[in-house]
Length: 320
Image 1 (cartoon, helix red, strand yellow):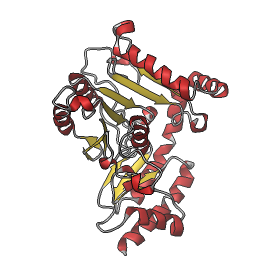
Image 2 (cartoon, one colour; image 1 turned 90 degrees about the vertical axis):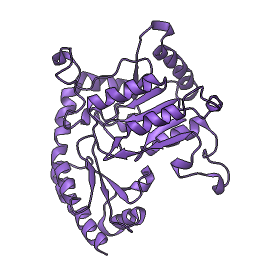
Image 3 (tube, one colour; image 1 turned 120 degrees about the vertical axis):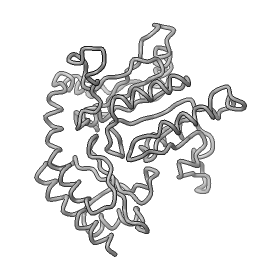
Image 4 (cartoon, rainbow, N blue to C red; image 1 turned 180 degrees about the horizontal axis):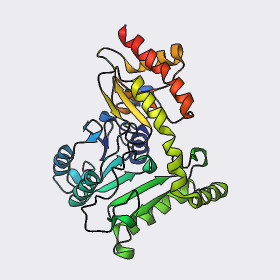
């Protein structure tokens, strides 16, 4: 089984469906397709509080579904935990101490931890930086440190920070502990086999663009990220009438809870039809009655103007 967190990044759910197979992977008939992630074989959907995963729940599930327990060797054991940080769709950036605790917990139970770091440059409040109380020189550490553990696979992308989504290029970082016999090395070797049967490699033009992006460096990205401050403030203000909001300190998303009885999918459709604004219904991410708003697609001043549309829509549609 694989653990995802509610609200989840729906592509992770689809990836598990396609890779693992089993019930919920779809079929030739509509009746065979399972759209509720909690009903998909091979998935466990964990609870969160304001976008922060519940590690107490995770420990209990890891204990109950430990590999080797009873019938768990037949496929019911948890073998992988996924985490997007900073979060999509939550817009929440998790602190380094939390990430360290999750890393040690998954290590204790011998399960893979997949860290999706696509939004590494968008840690708005610098929560991911190494704490100053650690016995290390934090002045020479990266802004977004990885955990050098054999069970951790770090995923990175050029799509967001370098605005290269159409180039489809990214990379992974694994631990080289214990050399050829280490878990990181073995995982890398198996991943190469999968890549060779699907994509083989990223196109050459994408590799050249990625090299240019690396030469521009993080400082260039951070200057672009600063331009999101205006839009973030505008969207947070536009959604302030909702009873609960999460996000705004990571990635480029904010989620808001709709009043009871308001269908999020119908609400999103109404925003498109009547107000010319697109949001993601929370039910697509396993969180009904919520919406996800992105504030990165327009220049700052245009975003301020655009934010007036969801503000008006939220006030009018939730009043009905």
